[in-house]
Amino acid sequence: MIRRTILEWQSLRYGPGDDRIPEWAADRIASVARKSPLGGEGGARVLSHGRNEIRAGQVVGMIAAEDCALEILPKIDFAGVSDSGAVNKQIRTQLVHMLAVVLDLDIDAGNITNLGWQRENILEILIRLFARKLADLVRQGMPRRYIDSEEDLPSLRGRLNVTRQFTTFAATPQKLACQFDALSPDIALNQIMKAAVRRLASVSASTENQRLLRELAFVYADISPVPVPALRWAELVLDRTNSRWRELVSLAKLLLGDRFQTTSAGSGRGFSLLFEMNTLFEEYVARMLKRALNGSGLNVHAQGGGLYCLQDISTGAQRFLTRPDLLLRENGSTELIIDTKWKLLSLSGRDNLEISTCSDDDQITSTSSPVVINTSNARTAPV
Image (cartoon, rainbow, N blue to C red; front, top):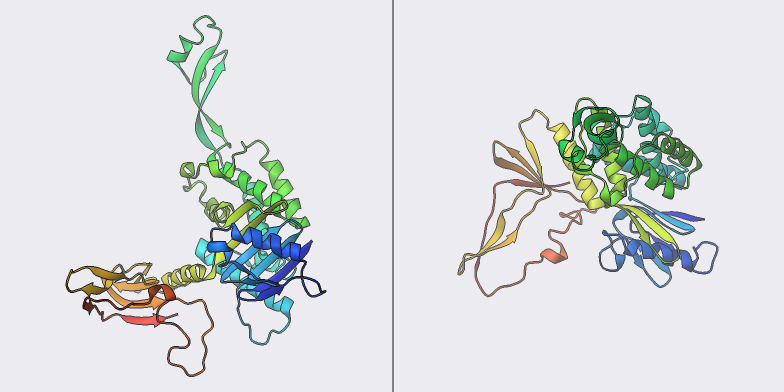
């Protein structure tokens, strides 16, 4: 099994040589990346497949194919740490912290110190976190709810289904068509947990994780198996009786959702668990700001705005709809506009700190009609 870890924007060379991976491994990994919804055209946003190297973009996570796997970590500098293993450990810790903030997960100190940060990849760490949290909750009792049931019994239970009784059993009165409410563990919440356990057991390569997942599979043996696309998320009920499951549901959504793709890739099957760092960082900053500004009167709005920058004088048409990353508002008034950037800022003395004022897709082209530029008193701040 070939396993490698690189940082975003780094390259991994392939071909002959001890310091390279085989070409077949690069082809399989790139094939899985192309099938990711985050990959864009040809999968280049995840991995660029060059002549003798594959290069990561600004998407991080795990890509695996038959007999090979690639972990892509965010590029974070830690002062005074030079060992690559120690650096990767701290990066994984920071990445899981960001995911925990975005998903409202409470990761206690015991879990943090015993997740195998240095020897395991980010997927195995998330699997272990999920399995341990699920095992702790199951020990406290599996949730149950009353569900509508119908059964043909020799004696009446609940109420009689009159229509069925006098049609289907008109000639066999010894059977009664009963309708009743039964307290059952076979509910949407447990079906979601079982689906997560089954999916993770099929992709985990860790002996410890496989042991935990086998134990959980035994616990959920009597729960109906439901394919992931058919899971009944709309029927999921979280109230005061099972509120402690809320965090685990968020983690299960992550591990069963669009970010986790299982695909047919080249020889055999592959999978990927990927996160776009720009989006993840924006959500993380928004959550941290909401915590910091709680009680201050300022409200945080992500992807708000909706104003236009330009107006065509001749036609009155609005141009260039704005969608700032974050807005801080107080009493309906916008006090601060924040643009989040997941990148290292250069301290070379430049005024713009190497931050572009607009992307290639947002370049303003010349027009034959005069325009009016709308301005606001709101302050702007890059983060």
